[in-house]
Image (cartoon, rainbow, N blue to C red; front, top):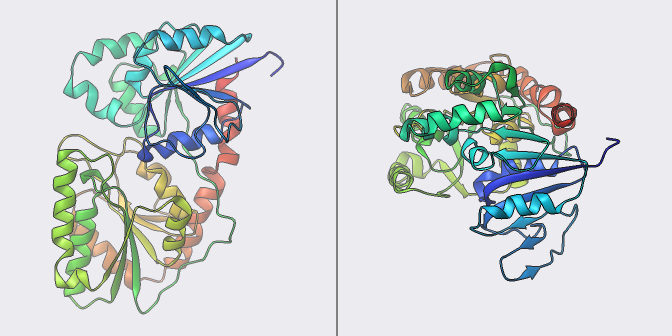
Length: 376
């Protein structure tokens, strides 16, 4: 860029542990600086950038690229912070549609809004007032970013102009160690992973595994996850998971890992032959929105996935590199899992899974796409 460009990230809260997909976008941002404008600071991490509170200043030990988080309830602060930065051009990325609406009219040259799940699939249905607000948003902003084609079609249904929508995938980085091509073993090891929320389909996966164990199959499950950002519905769902895990069949064959950071999750994934991640729509319309980045993180180790035709999951898990069934269909999931245990396609799917990430979803590949998108 010949001209001086400043870019800003706007979000309600910086940053819940469940929103690492936003952190990774920032860490892999194509410009050398992106400043954060947030109303609240939650769960600060040791590498959290410079934090400006209302009354105190805390310099960060790790102010690697001069980022800024502002914690205040005053909506004027974003306009003030943006105006205070002198540069020829300013780009604002609002994360979530409702945040994008709150950011309308800020003094920037380019305003981009990134949609996820809640803002797209639940908010306009729970509160119809958001439909006219979104129409105003769609007209006012320069671009709308989504993770995959399914999200794009949902935005068009809400009234967005397809010309403004850009499918811009979320990515991952390949592990330093070489992938392990999975092959048949006497004990079939399965990874089930995710927060204990209905949309993750963890109960579906456990019910199916329990059935196969009761039929005498030799299966071991590695369960990675727990309650995070739990609502009362989530707590109820987590209680059901705990109850199912008490059964003798599962108790003897499930290893509980709790929540793991990415590299530790990948180590567990390396012990498994497949990931069993049957995402689904929850009763309250909670869903994956696009797709969980966790899928890419484990596929990057060469782990093929048994998953569902849910939201944008088929955009990253194809028939070549995994197995897709209709969500919520326990019989189909059981049939497919049984087929996988005895099939000879594990190694081919494993290689294809790794290559799908390597050729389409690494941040190194995606950065130029982001660079093009934010060019003025």
